[in-house]
Image (cartoon, rainbow, N blue to C red):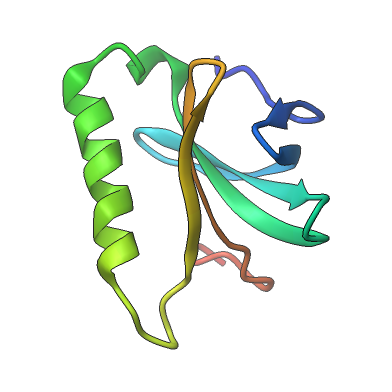
Length: 100
């Protein structure tokens, strides 16, 4: 069972609520108080942090997204590590999920 980060700080972000999860990460709605901005924060699952293969895939995903520039692609704000948790902060796009 995944530990929820709701209400916790992750670097400069306050984690508000989970938005979804996938094979290697969970995505949360978060708030950056200094910029008064809501973002999506993708956090690598804690059970995968010590696996070099998954950590490498997570970092490669961040580099791939950062290299893309198009009005229809979300903007990545930051890639980081805080207190042993690896994360990617990106635009939060309101609306329905892809599943919906």
